[in-house]
Length: 447
Image 1: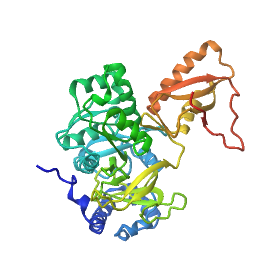
Image 2: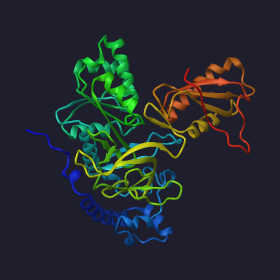
Image 3: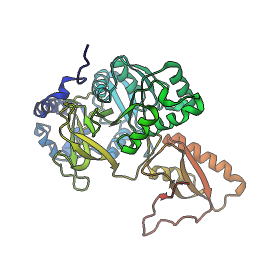
Image 4: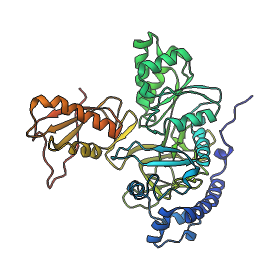
């Protein structure tokens, strides 16, 4: 039997038809928020906006953006899920957490309906990425700490009729490759640089050439790289497999952008579940979605029960690579090229230098509070432990430095979910804050 072209027929509908569906569901979602969201009742009231004024996608321009900091404040004001939770707690059957890279995680509730919605648009992503029912998938994303690349993607793959093998990146390279040799999965999903690293370790651990193994298709995301030609080429040559990119974010779903066989950008795959805008990050102006346009992604949920958001600023900066495609999908395509903040990605975990600074400062006076993240890799992503130089306090004796180093590494690991490599350096190694802003990052040539 011939394979279907798309996971869902809406992927091939004219965009005018999609917009009509979006606007109908937007009105329904706004009515739901009016009745159920204390967060948006307050936010729109303070802005002088009536819920009844929001009927079309164009009307969204009237609505102030929702910022990540507001969601954190909302969680503090009304735990456990914040003022923006819009479903009864007894209907919520799963809670996901962001990586907490700004100091504390945000929590996202999901009802049974929300999980069904996530499964649907995430299945479209994996189908665009070349995964098919009956495949066997080695799961190389992290499976712990509520990471949306874990359980939610396992659920989606199972929803598709794919056999998922949820070993997870934290099980270690040897364990993953042993399972690969034993179970012979034909597809793999994980972060691009970790998938490359796995291939590079095959010969050492399995005494085999990775090209001779069973992998035929790679779906990668969680960090930039999958869409970079040189990175993709390396992945494909190492595994002798086809590699495609995907992207998403915790607050809206695990993944809702997926690259098709044309491999010229990621299609938007949550057509009737999320409205996406592209704005000028400096002015907030909504930009026309056409090839070559660059801006920041903004999302509005239109079929969500537990934690729906209006005009959520993602801080992801993208370029539109096309509005038509040979695959027949009618949604536009993008590449993501960075963020508004100075973020680093360590093994798929977003890490903000300001969050590291907060942890280091909490050790004062055993530290001076001064530190530098040593970036000895190109771009913003690395698979290696992140190097951090920390000034020890003026009165700390040399014999206590190993213990202090160990405590810092543990605190950073436990708080921010990444592996650090701390080096203690003498006081006054770095310039102190003053009139001139002091960078928390020091870029050096790879050693």
